[in-house]
Image (cartoon, rainbow, N blue to C red; front, top):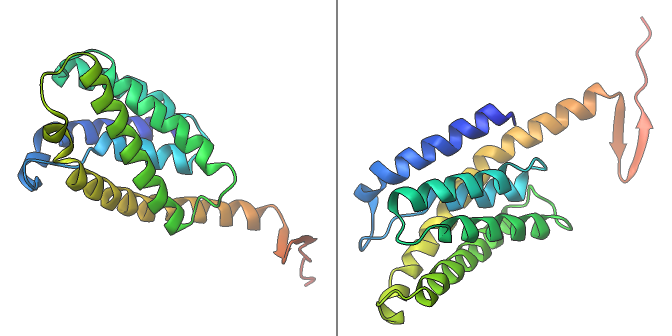
Length: 183
């Protein structure tokens, strides 16, 4: 994926997050599109889009809507790095691993975000802070799965194009040179 495309996707998610998502909120809880994009981009792509944009858009979120500066950026950065470590030994096209990554990323972000706010002196009780988390995690996992299914098709299509244009076929675990047809 090109950097320009990733910037457009993250910018649109930021705009949608701040304007339209309040209309689909359950119990005043909406999904965190920036978190979902960070999870998917960090899990699926080798480029550092997830890590780079987690810091940039996390800081933008904190500047515009946060109580304390840097909490969202740190939370998104930790989730992006965790997804990079999580994807290394696994198949990135796996639906179940993306589901597990969505759950792990959402819970990790919630723990960092709520823990940082509580340490910085937010006067709300833990129950008040944890009450909407179940809805948020379910929402985030659903969005991660949708994004994974959409973006996975592009990765598979690009892999097939690179695979067939290079002149090699995979047979089991062995590569063989593709024979050219005479005539």
